[in-house]
Length: 358
Ligand code: HEM
Ligand SMILES: *[C@@H]1O[C@H](CO)[C@@H](O)[C@H](O)[C@H]1NC(C)=O
Image 1 (cartoon, rainbow, N blue to C red):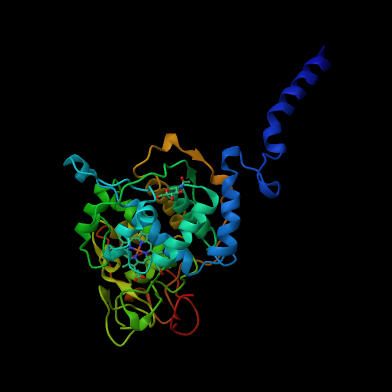
Image 2: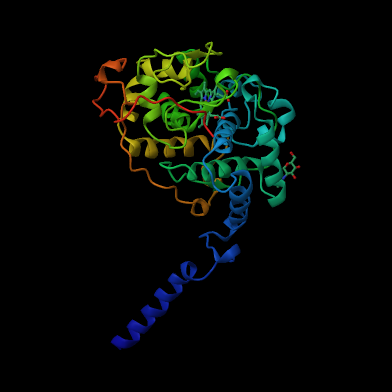
């Protein structure tokens, strides 16, 4: 009797275990909990070998992060409330309607990348909205310190062009940025958390004399350094002139945009900003949550399927947040009204000069 119960249990346990144990039919013996996710392994291979040139954390990752923001933020509750088309959010319209959207000033320099992504989408028969979110998660996974982003699939491929004027600009006032983000459903905290993307960022279009100057000292690592370095007093002009919406930075070769400098100092965002300066882990966790929120603007989460298990696990970061060598705690602009800027160690070594980001 006891044996019979045991045998029955063993059969049940065996049946329950089967989905994990046997391949679900994805290519190269890989498994996805949901077999509908298999196509994404093929897109993964294609992106890593081609678009990301061997799974690198370089310029294409930075471009996809601008693209994912500019696609998703094309969503306005106030336009909808006024009876106009408010945009489809994370719908891939930046690819489908590139003839309209790439003419927006904020989308300068993205044409080559958009065309490369379009080709990937057509090769694999996936929607442009899904593809942008997937390429974002894969791209971040190539950068040390990044979170393993959530990836949901199933966005419709049909879209309309985004209304103009919905993408925040580098010279915008904090109030304008906060209001625009709120109109899309994102809070001031979400905005701070999303901006961890600027820790793996450079600029190409704001000052051509310092092409690809990075926004922090570690443009290939997703970390706290962006939040630390934007909070230091701006003393240095990296190029022969200041570019569009450029303000002085604390490090030779670093580019600081006015919007980032102001968000770091505004009482509505500065306390969260300085928290992000203290912990790479906090940056990783919060950035992941904010990206997940942005990825479903215009969509119902519940209607999408979770294919996150296709996303590679990023390399973890060992370094701790630090003040760049040559600077000290006294170089911070204190801006959070509640709390002084937290004490951080100073990095050893010579005062850095930053090279152009790869
Ligand atoms: C909220 C206000 C934001 C403003 C005003 C802003 C503005 C800008 C500007 C002007 C550039 C320089 C582009 C160039 O000249 O090549 C840039 C770069 C970049 N942005 Fe943002 N951004 C914002 C938020 C975001 C968000 C939410 C993300 C992604 C989640 C993002 C990701 C990036 C990345 C990765 C780059 C580097 C591009 C490259 O190196 O080619 N940004 N941003
Ligand atoms: C998505 O839409 C474009 C047109 O904007 C079309 O060329 C492409 O084949 C569509 N892709 C899928 C998977 O339906």
